[in-house]
Image (tube, rainbow, N blue to C red; front, side, top):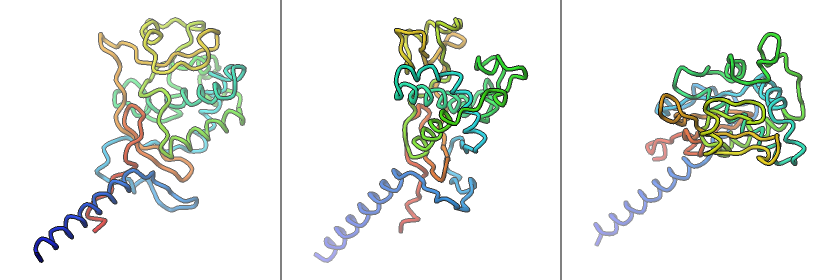
Length: 239
């Protein structure tokens, strides 16, 4: 009887530890304001990219999004919010993509040659020559906080978008036929189709896993933008 009782206690304890580990993995990482935690604190067993969003990045994303989707505002505030989120997530997906096609920082992705039309229209091809937009930057900041708290990407893992009324890329038809997200309103000229074009006979694939840190918050994601365990917690640390 003693052996059976001890077995039940051991099993119950292990079940409790397993449950605690699951719960901890599901919580987002919260870094309090003023925390001296560094990005070296990301566990070595996390196999993914780290996106650390700086104030200049928010400014850059705000200026880009203002030019790309500010016209969506006439379709309603939520349409603008969703459009901004889609552009920001596009930049993220390109940044963490493990190919050599895109740059690996937020600002470098934005300024990359022949990519975002607002950048192409500036004299020196840089986001710094776009007009600042405090209003859109505030929407960007809210989206970043949502993502850093575990909010999923609105475009899945897509890295491309276009407005068929403003451009006609050779990959556009495929994306328009099978979008992961439609920003704006397809019945108007204010619309963006996000999705996966073909590349060399096959479709683009989502990037690998990544972590987003912003404003004292952090969370990890699968390549399709769905939230996963914020950062792994070794079971041994709970015993």
